[in-house]
Image (cartoon, rainbow, N blue to C red; front, side, top):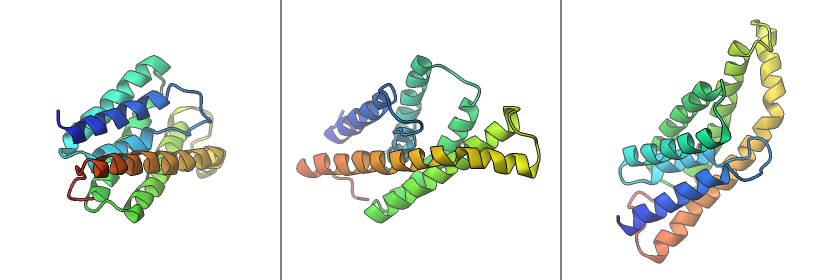
Length: 170
C-alpha cells in the first residue's frame, strides 16, 4: 500500500470510528466520509468500497434501523457530488459539496420518514411537517458536514503535502 492510500484508509477509519463516540444528533462524519472517498482516492471505486465498509461495520455495531435504505440512498447521491468535487478539489468545491450533502441528506431522509414511518399523513402538509420537524437536525448535519469535510480534506492535504504525495487534482 502506498503512503497516500495509507493516509486515506487512516482518515476513513478515524471518520468511521467517530460515529461510535458520543455526539450531538446528526453531527457525524458520514456524509463527509463519502464526499471525501469519492473525491480523494486515486480510484473512486476504492473510496466507495472504503466508505461503504466503514458504514456497514459501524451500522452493525450501532444497530440496524428501518431508515437505512434512505440513508444509503442519500449517501449514494453524496458520492455523486463527491465525483463532481473530484474534478478540482478546492476550498470552494469542498464547501459546496458539504452544503449540498447536508441538503441531500435532509431531503432524502425526511422524505423517507414522511413516506414510511406513519408519523405524518401522506399529504402536502404532512410532508411539510416532516421537513419542519427535521430542521433542527439539519443544523447539526450541516455543522458536522463542514467540520468533518475540513478535517478529512484539510488534514489529508496537510499530511500528503508534507510527504509530497498530494494527488494532481488537488
